[in-house]
Image (cartoon, rainbow, N blue to C red; front, top):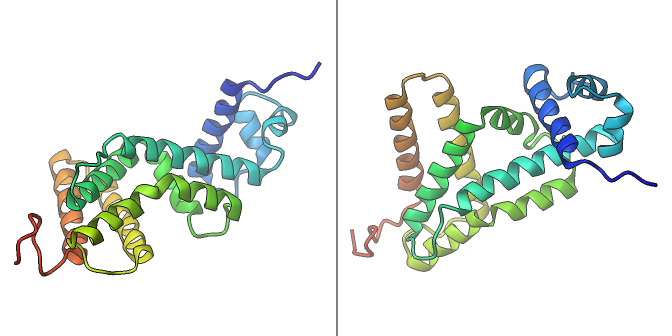
Length: 202
């Protein structure tokens, strides 16, 4: 009789991998160390993740899914483009602040080739809200007609820049100021010069 995988044990491996990847680096962390940290033998880990690549991909997908669930819970069709981008900004920064290890892991693996092309493609589906916000802004005429990929990339990089400052700032009030200023810098860079947020000429 084939034993069914235990979802709790799978999560145990992912949690152990996240801790070790952040503490020691992805390249310097072995699957044997992950299995030990999870309190199991290496052979048990391989039942859930046959290769280290499978583990890296599964962790990236888990993080992407959880982050997107938080942000999608903040979005409503009635929001303007400005309000939608602000919700994405606040939701992304807030989720990363609550899940700092996830942020540090993503910085290690993003754009490095450590995540498989298939996993990258799958994870992109979680972030459709970026492009929906851009589509809304273009339809409103509230943002400049820049390439969607460029706007999405700049938004993400500015979130990273804000997060790196927040990590070094223990004062909650100053953290909030960084979050506010970061969004203003992003929005001022893409907003249309011919309309303000209410659609009037500026």
